[in-house]
Length: 209
Image (cartoon, rainbow, N blue to C red; front, side):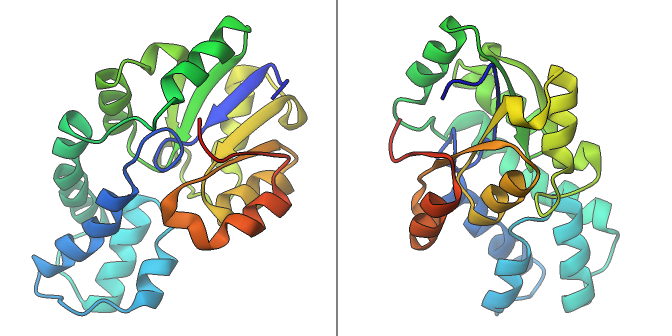
């Protein structure tokens, strides 16, 4: 990667958190009496913000409260994992250190709430590599839109073609690529079935840091 700017996804890209997220929706819904969740629903929430996911759950399952209160409940469930046991991907710290030493300016653009992302990356000792953390929630759109990447690039002072976006999810790779960014696909077990397609779309891929 020879770009001067880098925009990193966090979950599945820098940290091994996808298994926790995979369980979250089912745990949240089970606690509200929903024990059978269609796979189609789980696929639909993948690019959504927490609030968008909560709104979908409320529409589909008739849950009480507001999307904001449901999102807060799910964030609270994840909080302890981010603060205590979600690990950094092997070699990611060294990779970030190399980019930093080469003068690359970096940030994080994540569907995860900013305070959770900062808590996790701070605990893992890599938060200092990033100029800022930007959430999809803050820009009001999930990663089925390029809004978070464009906002991150603007804050870095970079045009899309000057910035590399690091992503593990096929839909995010596609969105960033279509928005004109240089895309680095990062392998994660959660997207193993899409890896060949990610490789065909991305400008560069990383099987392991």
